[in-house]
Structures are given as structure tokens and as C-alpha cells.
Amino acid sequence: MKIIITAAALVFALAATADAKDFVKGTRPQQRGYSLAVVTEGGKTIWLAGQTGAVDDTGKSLAGDFEAQARQVFRVLGQTLAKAGGKLSDMVQMTVFITDVRNGDRFTEIRREILGDDFPGSALITITALAVPEAKIEIQGYAVIGSK
Image 1 (cartoon, rainbow, N blue to C red):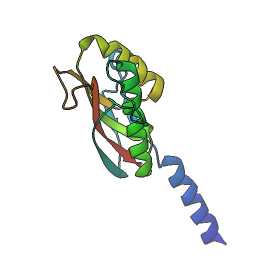
Image 2: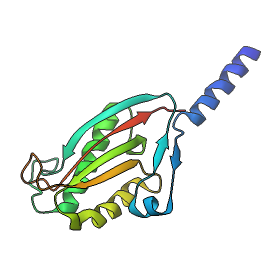
Image 3: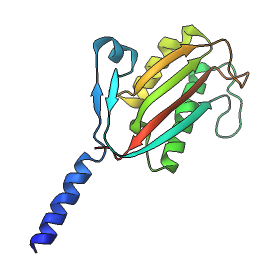
Image 4: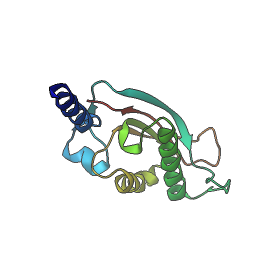
């Protein structure tokens, strides 16, 4: 009986810490929707290829619509992470490429809306174009699932 109780306590303790991450925050980074660092220990690391949102899930073009593309990219990343057993909140780092610096503030708002207050470490980089000509945004990154 002692073994069963001990095993049950261990399972509950591990479950409580399975998704624990330490977010190193600062005032300016929080305003811009990113963390200075995210500390994890253990877990499964998922490396996410760069994703664009130039078309939606039905194949409809989203050319010219930055907000729709940004939301689509997050949907694709979320779907990809789900296939690996994770979710967007497991992301610990992302690199975001945008083709128009004027979309930076809107991206920050969208990311805050989708991710809440615990943000991955991030870089937002403005470039002249992406490999998909209609794309206005691309996000790559990595996630850690089940970290302690």
C-alpha cells in the first residue's frame, strides 16, 4: 500500500511540474510580447520549420492581409505542435520575419492575444521579401514539451 501511495504522489508531483517553464521577464520585452529568456529542464524539444500564412486552411489566398497571415501562421504552428503532442504555449523561442516594419506593432498585439502573458524568447526581423512572394510574415522556432 505504501508503494501505491508513494507512486501516486510521484505521478501527481511530476504532472504538476511537467509544463513548468521559468520566463525571464522585463518591462520592455513584456510590452513588445517576448521574454528575455525561457528556462526549461528536460522535456522533448520540437524544432519548427519556418511557416508562412499566405493561404488559409482551404487554400484561399491571404495575399495583402498581414493580420490574416499572422493568425494563419499561428494556426499552422499550433497544428504542427499538436501533432508532436504540444501546444503554442510550449514555444520557448521564435524568430519572426516580416516584410513591412509597420506591421511590427500589430504583430505584437496578435501574439499577445494568442499567447497571453508568457511569451517565448523572440526576435522580430524586417526583411525585403520571403521565399513565398505573397507572404508578409514567417515564423520559425522551437518548443519544449514536458519540461521541468
